[in-house]
Structure formats: structure tokens, C-alpha cells
Image (cartoon, rainbow, N blue to C red; front, side, top):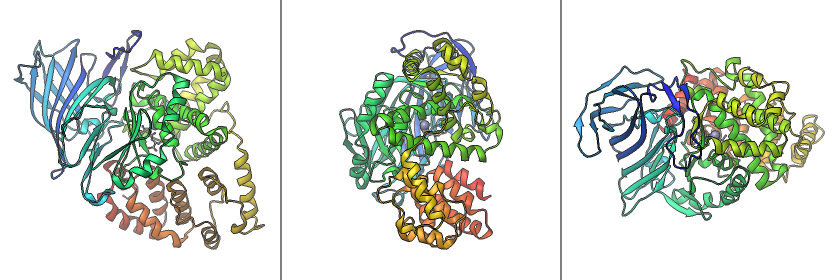
Amino acid sequence: MLLLLGAAGCRRTPVKPAVETVSDLHSYSRPEQVRVRHVDLDLEVLFAGKTLKGAATLTLERKAGSALVLDTRDLRIEKVETSPDGRAWTTAQFQLGPANPILGAPLTVTLAGDTKQVRIHYSTSPGATALQWLEPAQTAGKTHPFLFTQSQAIHARSWIPLQDSPGVRVTYTARIRAPKPLTAVMSAESLTRDGEFSFRMEQAIPPYLIALAVGELEFRPIGQRAGVYAEKPVIERAAREFEDTEKMIQAAEKLYGPYRWGRYDILVLPPSFPFGGMENPRLTFATPTVLAGDKSLVSLVAHELAHSWSGNLVTNATWRDFWLNEGFTVYIEQRILEQVYGPRRAEMEEALARGELQRELDRLPARDQILHIDLAGRDPDDGMTEIPYLKGALFLKLIEKTAGREHFDAFLRGYFDRHSFQSITTAAFLTDLRASLPAAAERVPIDEWIEKPGLPRSAPPPPVSEAFTRVEAETTRWIRDEIPAARIAAREWSTQEWLHFLNALPKRLETQRMAELDRAFKLTGSGNAEILQTWLLMSQRNGYIAADKRLEEFLLSVGRRKYLKPLYEELVRTADGKRRAQAIYAKARPGYHPITAATIGAILK
Ligand code: BES
Ligand code: ZN
């Protein structure tokens, strides 16, 4: 569990940083003794048995001891071999320890004095937490099955035996066998030839960024180095929605230096994908719920792209430091949006985020409001609230305001260079900040922001959006019954204005007032997932049963956890709602990702 963090073996690392010793509570591995540097995968995708079967060959760096400790979860280990040179292999002793519900089971391999490589022959279990196996009916094309992985935070161990800590960066190569006519894609450079899917990631990445998807996929370029993978029925829509991607890359490069990963493609997954997006290097995974038709939800692309700097280049060393990934990323996302779509749009997004942060703070216990969160004994997925994202971004915004934008931009650019291809802790960030921007670091109450719950009084004031002020005026007129819904001046409203409108409405509305809004604006029929989810939540809260059918449809067709969780939570508040929720869940459960199912299962239990 002790990691030595330092130059991650990447030829692009300019300076060799001081080595820092950090412990990661969420890994059994002991990389300070034996450290995995490269992972080579040879896997067959077996849809019938919902298993991946094959071998992982790990290349080691040895400092001490004669045991390699790996993380696993529900893996069936068939055989372990060791080799001094990658040619001669001998069967090795191994021991699979008891399984912990959060961490899985440690796999200890006994090494000979000259062992440089370890090969593990294994297969995954059908319940592997990183894998979702979709039936043809759950895909857009309806004829072929689909598989995708989601390794963050500690699910990589459920499909690859490795040192599953974000501080243990690895390069990787892979060969994947998949049934025809399916295509395999990974978070790596594709070397695929003649239907032999093979991949190479030459930059050292944390294990949670290793990703695979297999399905009937098409590809469309949307720029020199950007493109979209999706199923055929979705590909054109996706290519249009994401046409500004190249502009976003350029905006980010102008601020933080060159994009270092070569290509930037986006894979649009079937709707059961449990997240909005996942920043797998070279290949962002995205939910189809962002395909609104008007680019109004593409902040998600700005976000996942921003991770190419914050997260993938400079990575949180442990899951306590998750805010370093997400807080920086939200901050950069906002800067990209401002560059590409202008300050008005950025202001609106920021104001919406501020509202979300406030609602999250009202909801969460104090211990979960802390950026440098204590996750001892907890699943790192528990730390995945809006706090690391939005409080983190606000903290950086405060530093920006204190230092001045120009100085802060120069600092961030330098920060990404100084720590590129490294995994760093909150303390390392603060040391860097104090050294690089001493005056600003002095003036900001750092400890209060990092170690304390709540929103510090030093938080920058929420942005004033004139568009939102106009929305509020209209909302007030309707609430006071001065105008009917049909006369609200909403014709030109963007998605962001609609969301602000819905958020500004009283928590409780009479059913006939809900119906009036619905008649005027067809909200139950909205094709925009963000607006629809907000409306469905209001509908359930207010007993507006005309939306019940649509709610059920939504819960049955979408697997994005952030959307489903609040809806189920609202449902279980009433006895009737709880019965409906259970009935819907019974039908929907087989289609949910294990991560989503775990969350919803806990709400219903
Ligand atoms: N890296 C996260 C997703 C994640 C975090 C998965 C922790 C598992 C554990 C990704 O970058 C993300 O933040 N996605 C957001 C969308 C974004 C626009 C805020 C999501 O999925 O909601
Ligand atoms: Zn993120």
C-alpha cells in the first residue's frame, strides 16, 4: 500500500522529481518493493459466458522482497508463470487472499531472484464490477451484443490483475479477440490490422484509465485528430453534436500547452453507460444522453477533454486526492467553454454549478463536504459527490482571482509540465502552489478550503448572468400569477435558461400548475435529458401523475447514475412511489450497469 511516486518511466518527463512516499488505502499492492511498469493483455471476449479470458503479462521493477502483490476482484486465476527474460517461463506459486467487499482479494505471487515478468492466466466473472455486458436489445442496432469497461475508481482489478492504485502508472499493450463483425476499441493507439485488434499505450497512465469497448461500431472523423465512434443509428447525430471538439482542443492547448495524447476520439455508448463521460485517454467514453441535437450539453466534452491535462497527465495519487482530478477539470472545462462559446454561456454554466453545489452541501454530512476527504474504510466511489468537482473548482477560481488570471494561467501551465505523467497528492499540489504563487497562497485560507466542511466565506460570489436575471423576472411573474405560462417569454431560451427556470420554481407546485407548464412547454415530451430529468423529479415530487409513464420509460431506458439516483430517492419517499420504484427496478435491473444497480439497490433496500 506504500507507493513511491516519481518519474513514471516516461521518456517525456522532463525533470526527475523528488520521490514521495504515499500510502493508498485502496490497494493491497506494495509498489515500493515490486512495481508493475507495463501490462500486456491477451484477451478473448466471450459474450456467451460474459467473461474475458486470457492472460496478463506484467513487467516488473524490483526494489526489494520476493513477492508481487496485486489487486483482484472476482477473478478466476488459472495459472501464474514467471520469467527472467520473457522467453523462458516457469510455473510460480501464488496465493489468493480473502476477499474484502470494497478492495477485493490480494493476489500474492512468489518471485525468483531473477524474475522480471509475471504472466497470469485468468478469466473474469460475469458479475465483474468494471464490465457491462449488453444484450442486443440494449443497443441501438439491436442485432449484436456490446461490452464496455469502466475502471475508475477501483474496478480495473475486476478485469485485470494489477496494482490498482492511481499512483502506479503503467504503459500497456493488448491483443483482443472479439467475434465478427464486432469492433474492439481501447484507450490507446490502435494497431489493428486484418481484424486482429491490437493496441499500444506508450505513455504511463494510472490503471483506472485502461478501457475497452466491443460492439458493432462505426467511425466518423470530425477533425484532423478527432473523431467519433458509435453504433450506426447514432453516428451521424454524434458527429454533428461534437463538431466543435477540435476548437475545444485548441482552446485548451492555448491555455495549458500541447495536447499530448495524439488522437482525441469520443465513443458514444448505449444509454446504460453509468456516467456522463469517462476520460479514457485518446478515447473519451460518453453517454448518448448528451446528444441533445443542439450542442447544449457538450460541456461534457470540454470536461472529459480537460482531463487530458488534469487527471490523465497529472493524476490524483490516491482517491483522497480525487478533487485534484475533478476540481481542476471543472475549472478548465469552464475556461474552455468561455473560449469556445463566449462568457455569457460560461456564466450560465457557472451559475448552474453554484446552485448544484449549494444543494449538495445541504444534502451531505459534514465529513463528505471536505475536499481532502477521509476515505478510510470506505469505497472510493462514495467520494464521488459534487464536492470535489464544484467546491474544488471554486477553490481554484478563488486562487485565480487572488493571483490574477494571467499569473494563475502561467502557474497552471507550469504545474502540468512539472508534474506531467506523475501522480501527486494534495500536499504536493500545495507545496507547488506555495512555491510558485507565494503571495496568493498566503492570502487564501487554504486549510479551510481543503480540510474543512462547508463553503468558506472567502468563496467568490456567484457570477451574475443577465440572461438568468431575465429568466428570474419571468419566473416571478408566473409564480405571482401575473401572467399565464403561455406568456412566459421563453421562446429563445437555451437549455441552461430552461434549467435555471425549473430550478427557480417553488419546490411545491399544485398539480394544475404543473399541467399548465406542461401544456405550454411540452416538458414531459422534452428530448433533452437534462431538462427532462429535472422535470421528472419535480413531477414526482408534486404528484403530477401525467408524467408517470414518461418517468418509467426514462428509468427503463437510461442508466446514467446521476440521473437515476435522485429520481429513485424521490420515488421512495411515498409508499405508493416506493412500490412503483420496486416494480420498475425489477424490470430495469438487468439493463443497469453493476455500479448503477448497486446505488439504486441500496436506495430500495
Ligand atoms: N472521471 C469522471 C467519472 C468518474 C469519476 C467515474 C469517479 C468513476 C469514478 C468523469 O470525468 C466525470 O466527471 N463525469 C461526469 C460528467 C462531467 C460533465 C461532470 C459524469 O459522469 O457525470
Ligand atoms: Zn471528470
